[in-house]
Length: 570
Image (cartoon, rainbow, N blue to C red; front, side, top):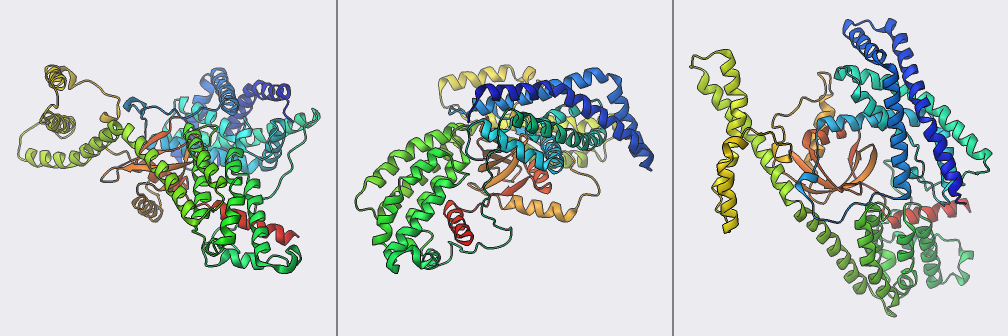
């Protein structure tokens, strides 16, 4: 069913409840803080507690009103994206579009992730049921987290925004978020439960849950496609009564039919992708009957092509990323030609695979070329960051024997070093020969404005801070930090990562990293498409378990696992 009136009615009920959620969370947070006063033995902890309580009680009505407004805004945004997804624009990238994710932004994402985890743990069953009810309400056949416009991320982002609006210290904000996270988890468990009961009273039934094949972390699949003759062994394990006469060809056709059936049932694939891959079934069967290597080698061009299409399409969903639409527009005629060929072969699939890979590579290169100005700015920022301590060391050495006031010493070793670093950049730039008359006039014009512009504040990437911010506390686990730094060293161009950005998990491609590994540029399906990050920001996410190299079972491996599960259940 898809009832637009019920969808709106449900959304309106959740929006109306936003201010009440804000009121209950703040009240419960204040009560928890008061109750914890007696258990705080350290004076510093008690001081933070008093600071947070005072901040919450200065203008409680204004705070609750702003919090409730943020909750409603996040719910509305999530519902709009669900109906009219924000698509990543396919246009040239501009330097002013680039936002550098530094340690502060990483800390915000870490805060949001912790709040989401608290809500997930506390309201696990209520959330699962609400997700199934939302799927039915929207007429969907698979469970999607995004189908729920009131998912934990929505409330966690609103809480984070509220926390950063409270005038307390960083430690005080952390205390507030930890306490409010527990309070919000309790409140939302009741809110989600009420929403489920309300939807059921309107006649909405939850979508039937179908479990996915269970693959335990750290264990190999029962049938590992990367092993020789894996599909042959699976084919031989089919029940004999399912293949009349036990003929090898019939067993092959039967297995391929089962595999494509599982591909078309895979909940991770969009319907368009399923349709495209499904058209290849007859063609793959014809290849299998004439080419034994298709059943004996996991890297046969036919399987590699199917896996590549599925992986890239999953990284760039059509509903939120224009690159996904462009990819499918390229793939569809390619698949049509394969499916219509009466005598398909491995060579034919090899050519199609090369075409797909060339399209993906050209797409990545085009993205990088469009952002060359940003890449250049990041590279220059890294050079300044490298040059700064060397110049400061030289200045300090020169000042050792000079009779200067302490104020002058601080100025020369601080602000003046920053000026010199900027001067080196300008000097290097001025030595570049103009390539045209307009460029020459531009250089001369910039020189005339140099005196006034040298003290202007620039908020672009070219003026990034050159002094790294402190990370963590004195009790930070050195072993974990060292492991995170080793992971960063493994990141090379083209690597796929799973990152927690903007309150959600996304798959990101590494397009560029600076020479010294201080800056990274990645692309994803999130609005904006491009993300530049400092090394320390990535390191913080990695330490908190919010950044990892992307390792996923291929589409064909998932299909094999599902076939095995069906055989076991039979």
